[in-house]
Length: 330
Image (cartoon, rainbow, N blue to C red):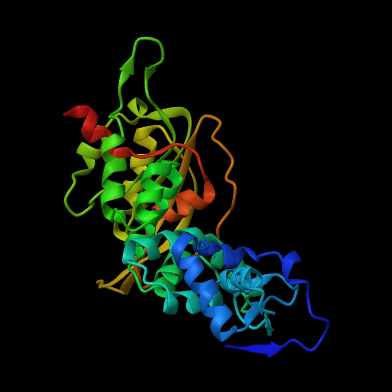
């Protein structure tokens, strides 16, 4: 672990604040904390407390509290500042704590946006794009879990359902089961006496172009689920670009832009296909995006469009347009 022993003035232990990275992992309480206090009282502090260069605690909040409770003078080291403080804290704590896959997924969902922001600030290669999908992949790799688990955890956190969040964080409920419970709670597009059908400002669609007929797709009436002022994300491979543009027109949307998104490499007639196109279209007076991503995401690997949509329009109601129509037509 890159660090250096403190050679300057000793900080006042009682006044030290925690770095946000340190708060990823909860404080221990009760009998577990008392055991740590007694161990430090009997054996002293074996592992120094790690400080950020700004003198906030990066690692060792529990050891610091235990030192104060045991009346033992704490020792400090200062991180050398190389790399990411969040990656460092995760690396140190995953060795100590026995977290299951779902608990690690919740941590990954919490830090994925921070990792992306750190990457954007520190990247040096011109033209490099850091896509939301890459943030999910990096967080998954850091926690040794699948990107799908991170996406499920992100949905649980976005739901705001504190009971479900606590059950997953405590290890009592798998994140996959929590995500399924949230899916079960989603009502089908329903008609109310006062407001009419529920409509969404953000829609995304991923037709199975090789199986679904164009005329059948074009016949879908998206106005049943789309708000008057809406943004639609439509994913299409190169070979279906012409049909996709016609589909937007038939659905009443105006093409605005596109993002090249990665997909698993696939042999093509003229080139080796490594990307799809994510077409962005609007109608009415659509909401403005919170962020504008680069037009090129990673190639050669599957990029899920939900991560891009969430980054551009965080918190806005959104729906899989084709799934919503399927529910409504049954």
